Structure formats: C-alpha cells, structure tokens
Length: 405
Image 1 (cartoon, rainbow, N blue to C red):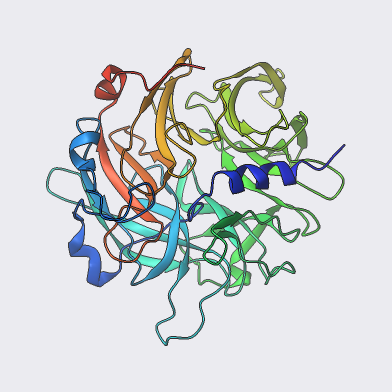
Image 2: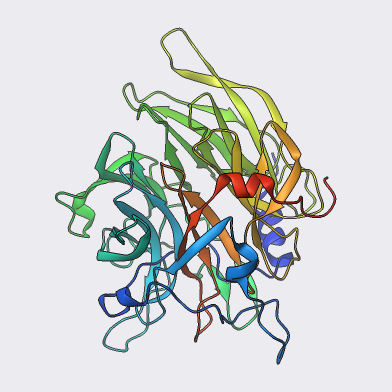
C-alpha cells in the first residue's frame, strides 16, 4: 500500500491553510474581554477594504460571539471539545513563555472551566491548566463521556524525534501536518493531573507509529481512532476498552482520519483523501456489532461531500442528523464552517463569514453552543478559540451555499 500522507499534506498546502489544528483559553486578564469586537484581521480581505460585519451576517445562526483565548497567553490555540456536563473544555495550544524565552515547537494539552453569564451563555474560560508533559507533542483531546474528570488525548509523552513544527509556517505561508511515530493515546485523571508523564496512563499505541485522533462512544465502551505506521496508510481503528480488543474498520486507500461517533453510537463520521486528488471529502458509515455489542466493522459507507474542495473536521450536532465541518467551498484562502444534513447531504449552508480561517467546529451537548477555531480576533493574527450561541432552526432555514456537489 502506498503511504497517503503526501496527499493530505498537499491538500493542506493547496489550501494555504492558516494556523489550524489549534486551540486556546482566556487568560485571567482577558476573561472580561469575552465579547470581542467584530473588526478582526485575517486572510480574505484586501488591504484597505472594509471588514465585513460578521456578527450581522452570521446571525441569527450564531449570536453572542465570545473570544475565549488570546495571543497574549497563547501563540495559537484550537481544537476544543466540551466535557459531557458542558462545564469544561479541553484544547491544544502553544503557550507564550512569560519570561520571553522561545516558545515550544509543539502543542500542549490544556483543560479549562467554562464561565457563563446569567443567561447561561459561555463568555470566558477560567482555571486554565496544562495536563501534558513539557516538551511533548499533543493533539485531539476528548473527555470520557461518563466521567468528566477523565481526558484522553494523543501525546508523544516525551519530545518527538521529528523536530519540524506543525501548523502554519510564517516564513513560507504553508501548512505542515506532523505524524510523530511516538504519538499514542493516553488518559489523564484531572483529579490528580500535574502535567507530568507519570500522570498519564497509556491506552493504545506503542510509540513506534502514529496513533491519535481519538474519540469515545457515548457509553464509554469503544475508542475510535486513526493509526498510521511506516507500512500502512491512515486507517480507522476501534478498541473495546473492556477487553482491549482492537480491529481496523476502515482501510480504504488514502488517509482516513478525524473520526467521531454519531450521537446515537450507531455510526461514525470522518474525512478521507482516498480519491488521490489532493482534496478531502467527508464520509459517514453505519457500525456493525456482534451480539455482545462489540464493534466489528462498518456498513453502508457513503460520501457526504463530493466536490472539488478540501472538506474536513466534521462534527455532529446533538440532533444526530446535521453535521458541521470546515471547507474551502468559499475559497482556498479562507476556510469557513458549513453545515449539511446527513440524510440529504446535497445542500450545504454556510455558518461562518469572517475574514480569516474558521475551522474545527464542535457543539455543546445541549446543542446550544458552537465552539471553533478562528482568526477573527483583533490585533496579532493568530488562531484562537471562539464560541457563540447556535440556532439549529435558523441554520436549517438558511439558503444553500452555491451549487450542490
């Protein structure tokens, strides 16, 4: 089998992607600045041109926007998910050293408490803390669905042997996706976490091949993840956490990754570059289980997108039917968040409209809040964590974007 990684990297280079795969949280000093202004900088707006009023154009689907992380604390931040009780978030970020020394080359993993106003809207983060070892590379955090004090994430635990920095490269304007072989999935108990390797419990991966991009089924029984090693492409695997049994369930040509369960645990959603055309498409599939409930494979796999774009990071709304994702449908220089109905995927609606990339959307468990990574903040251009109140009915009523694939 041919290693599909160059295809994925090419797709991201074609996209001229800004600082994706990042996450962040507010510093104590910025917690009061939850309602950031709408005059952000970023790609997609010519010099001297008026910045669109994205608060107006995104309403009524997104309202009460709040920036949660800021460049005074995090050089870049993103990929954040809510805890099962919606009281915390987990995210990855590169922290700005307080003493002015050179920052880390790799993302650390952080958790933070969610701050809400009197109406229950998310406005800021508090008690932000790092849970990954210093010097390690980390990605894709996920809370255990039955215990909000347990977090799983991909980590090299020690400094990776590949010292190339992932993410947007300021000197070249290109994006680099890193696959450190030391990456494995670990678990951290927040009740005892101290940011050291000793506080991490290995779950899957032996440090000799990339294992990451993990998420858990709603019952906490099954871990879904991506595995890459020198002899295979990126494939989707499952692990029964009760028995330790592992099996590959998607091994199509190309890189399949970023998988999540549907809210009812009956299926999965993921992205793939299996067409070999330097693009990414979103797929869904039904899960097959044996009489004991163990996942044994997939059935009825189907493409949700089939256009000439890069479509990635799909995430289901809790209604179990609609999913948000990031796409180049509005242009390869300015990725935006879109939504489709998995039962009728030919119709895409645009959710975000601000200059600069908006990617990695996720929802709170009550479906009322969307959290994502955006570059719309004022001042220094960087990827930071954003949140807004989300109205599914308004999204469904929005006119479709462009021609359906």
